[in-house]
Image 1: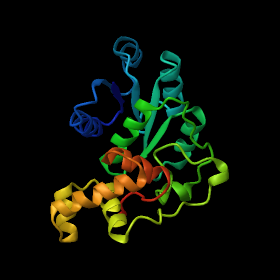
Image 2: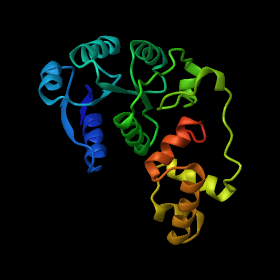
Image 3: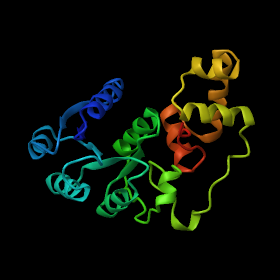
Image 4: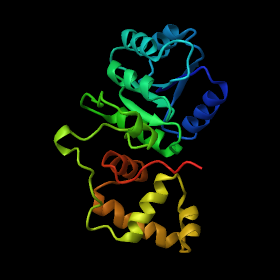
Length: 224
């Protein structure tokens, strides 16, 4: 169960559409400007809150309010690339996931899926430089442990075409869109996906996105 907290009406509308398109996600409610937030949390008991950094209240205050009302709740912060300071402060306050607003909707869905099934406490890095946020390098999912800070390389078993398919999936493209982009058939795309799932040990596109973003294999789409 997911709730949305944002002062931006159009953003709330867009998030509602993204979430409701996923039949396995139940949208329990929305809060604008933090109004009736306590009532929403205590009556609807959402498991995950999507929190927008654009709010009349400080992000830190909103995080504390949410965590105090429902300590076990997971918070996904939706941040802009120029909001590095508020994002750093939010990470320090204990948000569980971070999605940049320039990233495609499958990244948000993959983050929701990851947090919904996480059995261990999620820890995100507190240190966050402005340059990393602006380059879109901050993962929306839990970071690798400090001793594995070096960027990971593509698994050697993936072909260049399979890597290209993964990159296109990270942009939110469907099988047909990928087929059109690569000038191949949808059947061939599905064949590539089967091989990719097998090589990376995942069972669906969402888990593939989680694996790819978790290990820095793909990034958000380039800015226009």
